[in-house]
Image 1 (tube, helix red, strand yellow):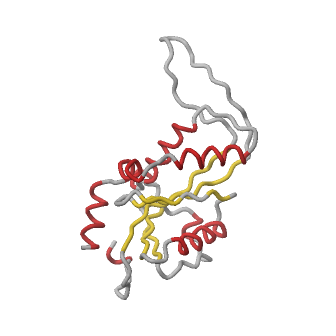
Image 2: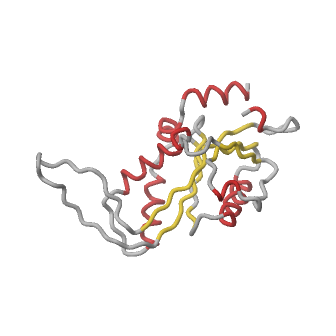
Length: 185
Protein backbone atom coordinates (compact mmCIF):
# COMPACT_ATOMS: atom_id res chain seq x y z
CA UNK A 1 0.00 0.00 0.00
CA UNK A 2 2.79 2.38 0.88
CA UNK A 3 4.26 2.18 -2.66
CA UNK A 4 0.99 3.41 -4.17
CA UNK A 5 1.15 6.71 -2.27
CA UNK A 6 3.43 9.32 -3.88
CA UNK A 7 6.23 10.58 -1.65
CA UNK A 8 5.13 14.16 -2.43
CA UNK A 9 1.66 13.56 -1.00
CA UNK A 10 0.76 15.94 1.85
CA UNK A 11 -2.91 14.97 2.16
CA UNK A 12 -4.31 12.52 4.71
CA UNK A 13 -4.56 8.98 3.34
CA UNK A 14 -7.92 7.26 3.00
CA UNK A 15 -8.16 3.69 1.72
CA UNK A 16 -11.35 2.66 -0.05
CA UNK A 17 -12.63 -0.69 -1.25
CA UNK A 18 -14.30 -0.15 -4.62
CA UNK A 19 -16.42 -2.41 -6.78
CA UNK A 20 -19.53 -2.35 -8.93
CA UNK A 21 -22.68 -4.40 -8.66
CA UNK A 22 -25.28 -4.92 -11.38
CA UNK A 23 -28.92 -4.48 -10.36
CA UNK A 24 -31.72 -5.45 -12.69
CA UNK A 25 -35.39 -6.19 -12.97
CA UNK A 26 -34.94 -9.97 -12.79
CA UNK A 27 -35.97 -10.98 -9.27
CA UNK A 28 -33.13 -11.83 -6.88
CA UNK A 29 -33.93 -15.21 -5.38
CA UNK A 30 -32.65 -16.33 -2.00
CA UNK A 31 -33.34 -19.21 0.35
CA UNK A 32 -36.63 -19.34 2.20
CA UNK A 33 -37.57 -21.36 5.24
CA UNK A 34 -40.25 -23.98 4.57
CA UNK A 35 -41.42 -27.27 6.00
CA UNK A 36 -39.08 -30.12 5.10
CA UNK A 37 -39.85 -31.45 1.62
CA UNK A 38 -41.84 -28.38 0.55
CA UNK A 39 -40.32 -26.27 -2.22
CA UNK A 40 -40.29 -22.55 -1.44
CA UNK A 41 -42.68 -20.43 -3.46
CA UNK A 42 -41.91 -16.90 -4.57
CA UNK A 43 -43.13 -14.57 -7.29
CA UNK A 44 -40.47 -13.65 -9.82
CA UNK A 45 -40.22 -11.66 -13.00
CA UNK A 46 -37.98 -12.13 -16.03
CA UNK A 47 -36.98 -8.71 -17.29
CA UNK A 48 -33.47 -7.83 -18.28
CA UNK A 49 -33.05 -4.05 -17.92
CA UNK A 50 -30.29 -3.19 -15.46
CA UNK A 51 -28.01 -0.50 -14.12
CA UNK A 52 -24.82 -0.51 -12.08
CA UNK A 53 -24.17 0.70 -8.57
CA UNK A 54 -20.56 1.81 -8.18
CA UNK A 55 -19.62 1.46 -4.54
CA UNK A 56 -16.79 2.70 -2.36
CA UNK A 57 -16.45 1.99 1.33
CA UNK A 58 -13.64 3.18 3.60
CA UNK A 59 -13.34 0.20 5.97
CA UNK A 60 -11.49 2.17 8.66
CA UNK A 61 -14.22 4.81 8.98
CA UNK A 62 -17.33 3.31 7.36
CA UNK A 63 -17.62 6.29 5.03
CA UNK A 64 -19.29 5.36 1.74
CA UNK A 65 -20.12 6.55 -1.75
CA UNK A 66 -22.70 4.73 -3.93
CA UNK A 67 -23.59 6.39 -7.25
CA UNK A 68 -25.85 4.49 -9.65
CA UNK A 69 -24.80 4.63 -13.31
CA UNK A 70 -26.34 3.12 -16.45
CA UNK A 71 -23.52 0.79 -17.52
CA UNK A 72 -20.04 -0.47 -16.70
CA UNK A 73 -17.30 0.49 -19.12
CA UNK A 74 -14.19 2.67 -19.16
CA UNK A 75 -16.14 5.86 -19.96
CA UNK A 76 -18.52 5.32 -17.04
CA UNK A 77 -15.61 4.46 -14.75
CA UNK A 78 -14.04 7.79 -15.76
CA UNK A 79 -17.26 9.61 -14.81
CA UNK A 80 -17.22 7.80 -11.46
CA UNK A 81 -13.54 8.68 -10.79
CA UNK A 82 -14.03 12.33 -11.74
CA UNK A 83 -17.05 12.74 -9.46
CA UNK A 84 -15.39 10.81 -6.63
CA UNK A 85 -12.31 13.04 -6.96
CA UNK A 86 -14.44 16.18 -6.55
CA UNK A 87 -16.25 14.76 -3.50
CA UNK A 88 -13.00 13.68 -1.81
CA UNK A 89 -10.49 16.33 -2.88
CA UNK A 90 -9.05 16.91 0.61
CA UNK A 91 -7.59 13.40 1.01
CA UNK A 92 -5.31 11.12 -0.97
CA UNK A 93 -7.60 8.24 -1.90
CA UNK A 94 -6.26 4.75 -2.43
CA UNK A 95 -8.94 2.70 -4.21
CA UNK A 96 -8.56 -1.07 -3.89
CA UNK A 97 -10.08 -2.47 -7.10
CA UNK A 98 -10.32 -5.74 -8.99
CA UNK A 99 -8.87 -6.18 -12.47
CA UNK A 100 -12.03 -5.64 -14.51
CA UNK A 101 -11.66 -4.10 -17.94
CA UNK A 102 -13.18 -0.84 -16.73
CA UNK A 103 -10.46 -0.51 -14.06
CA UNK A 104 -7.52 -1.42 -16.29
CA UNK A 105 -8.54 0.54 -19.41
CA UNK A 106 -5.70 2.51 -20.97
CA UNK A 107 -8.05 5.46 -21.54
CA UNK A 108 -8.62 6.10 -17.81
CA UNK A 109 -7.21 9.38 -16.51
CA UNK A 110 -6.68 8.86 -12.80
CA UNK A 111 -7.01 12.14 -10.84
CA UNK A 112 -3.83 13.25 -9.05
CA UNK A 113 -5.12 12.52 -5.54
CA UNK A 114 -6.37 9.02 -6.38
CA UNK A 115 -4.37 5.82 -6.89
CA UNK A 116 -5.69 2.40 -7.87
CA UNK A 117 -4.36 -0.62 -6.00
CA UNK A 118 -5.17 -3.79 -7.93
CA UNK A 119 -6.17 -7.03 -6.25
CA UNK A 120 -4.94 -10.36 -7.66
CA UNK A 121 -7.04 -11.67 -10.54
CA UNK A 122 -10.19 -13.66 -9.73
CA UNK A 123 -10.10 -13.04 -5.98
CA UNK A 124 -13.29 -11.19 -4.98
CA UNK A 125 -13.01 -12.57 -1.45
CA UNK A 126 -10.13 -10.12 -0.87
CA UNK A 127 -12.30 -7.08 -1.56
CA UNK A 128 -14.24 -6.07 1.58
CA UNK A 129 -17.02 -4.35 -0.35
CA UNK A 130 -18.17 -7.77 -1.60
CA UNK A 131 -19.59 -8.38 1.89
CA UNK A 132 -21.53 -5.13 1.62
CA UNK A 133 -22.99 -6.18 -1.75
CA UNK A 134 -24.00 -9.56 -0.31
CA UNK A 135 -25.78 -7.83 2.56
CA UNK A 136 -27.58 -5.44 0.19
CA UNK A 137 -28.68 -8.41 -1.95
CA UNK A 138 -30.36 -9.93 1.12
CA UNK A 139 -32.36 -6.70 1.54
CA UNK A 140 -33.31 -6.60 -2.15
CA UNK A 141 -34.22 -10.30 -2.50
CA UNK A 142 -37.69 -11.28 -3.71
CA UNK A 143 -38.65 -7.68 -4.57
CA UNK A 144 -40.18 -6.96 -7.97
CA UNK A 145 -40.11 -3.62 -9.75
CA UNK A 146 -42.18 -2.28 -12.63
CA UNK A 147 -39.41 -0.01 -13.91
CA UNK A 148 -35.69 0.44 -13.49
CA UNK A 149 -36.34 3.82 -11.83
CA UNK A 150 -38.33 2.07 -9.09
CA UNK A 151 -35.51 -0.40 -8.50
CA UNK A 152 -32.92 2.40 -8.33
CA UNK A 153 -35.08 4.32 -5.84
CA UNK A 154 -35.39 1.23 -3.63
CA UNK A 155 -31.66 0.52 -3.90
CA UNK A 156 -30.87 4.09 -2.84
CA UNK A 157 -33.30 3.76 0.07
CA UNK A 158 -31.70 0.49 1.21
CA UNK A 159 -28.18 1.94 0.93
CA UNK A 160 -29.28 5.01 2.92
CA UNK A 161 -30.10 2.75 5.88
CA UNK A 162 -26.48 1.64 6.19
CA UNK A 163 -24.73 3.47 9.02
CA UNK A 164 -20.98 4.03 9.13
CA UNK A 165 -20.82 1.52 11.99
CA UNK A 166 -22.60 -1.16 9.96
CA UNK A 167 -20.35 -0.54 6.95
CA UNK A 168 -17.28 -0.69 9.20
CA UNK A 169 -18.50 -3.98 10.62
CA UNK A 170 -19.08 -5.47 7.16
CA UNK A 171 -15.92 -4.22 5.47
CA UNK A 172 -13.39 -3.58 8.24
CA UNK A 173 -11.13 -6.61 7.88
CA UNK A 174 -8.75 -6.17 10.85
CA UNK A 175 -5.58 -6.84 8.85
CA UNK A 176 -6.50 -4.12 6.32
CA UNK A 177 -7.45 -1.56 8.96
CA UNK A 178 -4.20 -2.30 10.84
CA UNK A 179 -2.18 -1.88 7.62
CA UNK A 180 -3.83 1.47 6.94
CA UNK A 181 -3.18 2.66 10.49
CA UNK A 182 0.48 1.62 10.20
CA UNK A 183 0.90 3.76 7.08
CA UNK A 184 -0.93 6.82 8.39
CA UNK A 185 0.74 6.92 11.80
